[in-house]
Image 1 (cartoon, one colour):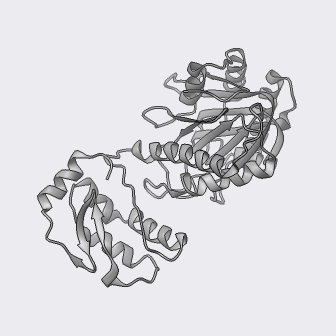
Image 2 (cartoon, rainbow, N blue to C red):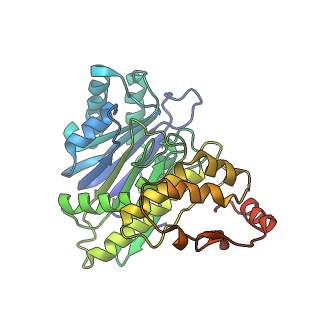
Length: 353
């Protein structure tokens, strides 16, 4: 893994989590960076979301401070003061102003932050900052809650480097849900460019994943750009590379879903618009009957076809076909003579369907 220039990382245990696992992460920019963000659409959003949404896009970000184990959500005015205090505490350690720091929290909803532990954790993290892959992975570990393991990815594009970390395993629905993510690059970007790149990447990745359909209060996806590698001469290629990295990170979330046995990837072809395709994919993904069929290794094509039919998209049933793991189950509006045992075996033997 090659990390982008201009970032330092740390992850420490401050005692927020009763388990004693790491719970404070700090991502520091060695030079003021451009930052962009996309956020939860839940009306009951947490103070850190309000804070970051008001500050991005920006061109003078010093870093991001994250705590896990406590969501600082539904915590009233005190919660907002605590989010601002987290930013100020991190900025004090980084030698800047609190308004230059972004904040993310994840964990249990409805409890006030233990600010004495948060303060200690930020101080510890600042003292531990480093630019190695181990430091990056320590930060990626400290943002986790019910995740089974860290979620990281990286890409290179000429002399430009990109890296990202994310967390999420439950409360996952489109528009991110309980998901935190930080994407980083050393490419030079304007705030407007960063916002557009991030929104596009989010739309094809994190906004397409589901576990149980529960949208959370805290989801935040940030893009930080230090500019130390200069401009990218091909913005389309940069967008494609960022999309690829975001998709890799996003796929790790439902694969790590609480109790998940399969990662289901739904591809819809032949629609007039991408929005129509998304509606059909969402209807299939949201169907409890489809999920139970996949979990039970049951190639019940009727449940999938039925879900597509109530998606609210007009299509010709005689043109509808369905494949599962490359096996044709339904062709031109009629079931095929497939071997149910073979199809079931394919589902049982492959975690990805």
